Structure formats: structure tokens, C-alpha cells
Image (cartoon, rainbow, N blue to C red; front, side):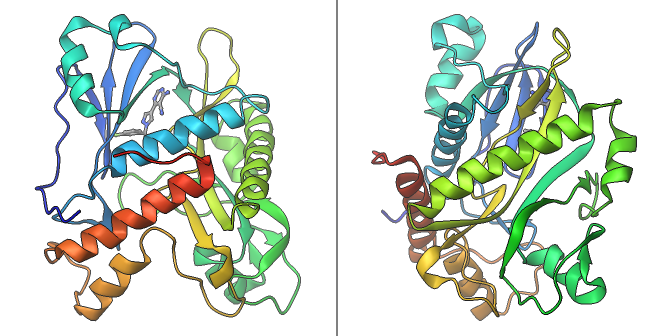
Length: 301
Ligand code: PZK
């Protein structure tokens, strides 16, 4: 496949609630929201001019797979919904989205990113080198970049409206949430990470770290897993056979794109350069590989 389609915008005839860099949220009325993943891709925090065909569908499929595989650990916001049960105005749009949408329950979101790390990389590695700790959690001395941690750790972060999320202590995170909810969500986050990391490791993929969001179900008050979960956009996936402590392994999904951008000497300020078809194709292949290895299903485009 060699497609360089224009970046796909999402067209849905529903009130629009929120836009992320590569996904959108719409209001279904009542207690329902519509979560839509686009085919857009970002690198170095900039959205690329070309879309990755099927990316939205692959990520949505992965999220739905993981919601099913972890529903015994914690409640989640996903509500499997046949198209017939959706507002008439949205039905045709949704059919056209081709598997890029999820109906989810409206929650009161906790204002904290629930990051769980099993390996020392990214901002965790930076903090460790500077202070010997990550989010106030002291770690053994002499650890190397990308090394596996003795146990997965919970490293909360603020949800920055602009710029990067900032790591905070667990006490600071607890102060931002309704009483008693932080610890429940933390234990859910670590439990889901452990389940997914074990599962992925058996399929040749290291789940280095991941970011969850939680909310409170307004009807029951239950802490509920939200957002997309355990996708390449919310997680670091490494091919296990390329992992070697001392340097950061390649990303299963974005390495080919990043290497191409690096070789193009792009300075990371928008706009990003146009991606040639082979870069789009190779990047798409990384997402298909992640989907197929993790879900055990063949992706039929
Ligand atoms: C919610 N986001 C982030 C996601 C965007 C922005 N179940 C929920 N109930 C209430 N609010 C949210 C959710 C979820 N998930 C999520 N912001 C609000 C977000 C997708 C696209 F533009």
C-alpha cells in the first residue's frame, strides 16, 4: 500500500466536545460520549501532514481488546453499542468511520495522568539520572537507561493544557482527586499494566510504560478506566529482541518515522516535512504488527 492521503479530519454530525492532536470526543446526549481515533500521527509533538491508513482502526481495536482483557481488574467506560442504537444523524457517519469509534460512558474525570513504568526510560530516566528517584520513588543506584525496574512504579503526572505533562508526587496527585480515589485508581493502573505487560512479553513485545486516565461514574461513584488504553499512542512498545539496557530500544510503531525525520534534519518546528509513501507504509506496518501480535488476530484492511 502506498497512500499519501490528506490528513483525515473526522466528520460526525454530533456536538463536538474536545479535540486532541489525533482524536476527538463528541456528545451523544444522556450519559454517552463518542470517542473517535483519527488516522493522524504525531512525532516530536507535531502532527504529520500525511495520515497513516488504518491507524485509527488499529488503535481502536487494541483499546477494545484490552478493555475486554482487563474488565475483571477494574470497570471501564467502553459500552459496546450496535450502530442501530445510535442517533440516526450519526449512524452513517459512524459507518463511514469504519471502526474508529467507541461509545463510552460520561465520567467525571480525575485531573491526573496515571503513568505506570516497568522500565527506566524517557522522563523517568531523566529524573533518575538527576536525582536517583522518579516522582519521589527512590530506585536502586547504578541503573542503566531502559533497564527493567525491580517492580512497576506509579508515577503520576499533571494534565498540562499546554506543553508537557509534569511529573508530580503521589501526595500531590491525591490532593487533586476526591478523597480516597487516587489509591483505588493507582492500584487499578498497576494491575492493568502488570496484566498487559505479562501478556505482551509472551508475544515478543515489551510494554515499557503506559499512561491511563480514570474518572468517576456519576451514577455509582465507581473509579472507572477511561480514554484509549494500551495503544502505541499511550504506551511505549519495544520489540523484545531489540531490547538491550544502556540505550533506548526502537519504538515498534514510530521508529522508522523518527529515523526518517532525523535523517531529514527537520528541526521539530511545524510544519513537518511531507512523508514519502514508503515511510507511510513502513509506519503503518509497525501498527499492524503491534495489533496482530498483541491481539492474536489478523488485521484485515
Ligand atoms: C474525556 N478526554 C480526553 C479524549 C479528546 C480528548 N468517559 C469520559 N467521560 C468524560 N470525559 C472524558 C471521557 C473519556 N475518555 C476524555 N477529555 C474528556 C480526550 C479523546 C479526545 F479530544
